[in-house]
Length: 174
Length: 205
Image 1 (tube, rainbow over the protein chains, first blue to last red):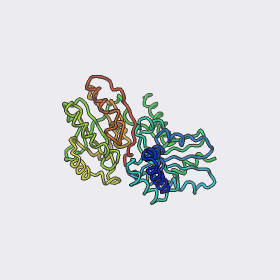
Image 2: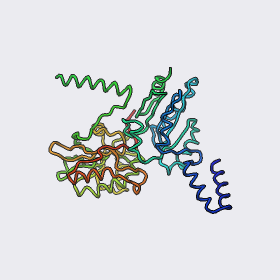
Image 3: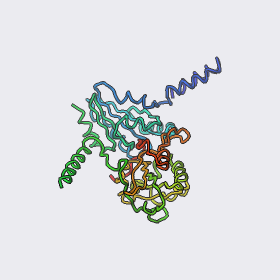
Image 4: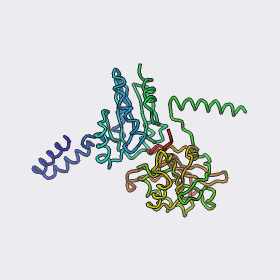
């Protein structure tokens, strides 16, 4: 909502001072890929999230609001930080919702379930490039998950039960 | 016998790997011979590849009603059949989901969808889910392009229909069309395998 207000202010100032400003401020918003409350990235924008060189445990889940098994397992990911309060765990939920559904489906979903984990949306049609780049064995079915810490990394093209997810995660804990 | 033993050892090793690390990648690779089947069509008749005496091959597409990616491709699947059925490569669509898990993919729903979208090709139910695992399909939509040879139906291409699920007008590479055109021209397929996001095939948990 804040973005929208800032956006409107810029827009109105722009209009008063110079009509051409209106276009540039709109472009700026698009370039930064901000839809109010949602970060949208292409694969180049996503890649740094998948290769953080810190000593935290990273769990990256690929999902979409229309994917029933994805939605079913989301609470298990959401609960991880509470289950392991002494571990440094970062959860990233990468939405593969269609861009024309961000505002009608994805944002209302995030609001409704009050998602605590970071959510970003991946919008990159060149799937044949980024799917194998994420994992050579990934056929492209979701849900899919990456767990990594430093150099240790595992990829899962499957859905998890809560216990299965914990079992996998615990392999990364010291 | 030695081969059999070796095979079992490898088989067991693969089985363990499947639980520990990577997903098990089974199913066909390009160059394999694809199985025929006898599956029920939306008109109640059973359909097999062998029924198509004059076909040069088949565009087998695992698809369904309920997956947004599959839905996004429906018109393009119809277009593929219209363009290539008369040239000897008809579309054969197979719905692989368990319909208890996805009632929206049951036979009645399949009939309704096919009628609404004007499907010109068979839309078959993989009842018992025996066929898709043999092909190695993992998601919808998932294409297997087959060419009829003396030895059987040889897999020539596996993957996506094209490189833009979002917008048919923004497609830069029509993978399936390029592959079929190559086969029709007596050439080898350049891009034999592609990856795309799709909905996992639904099974009872």
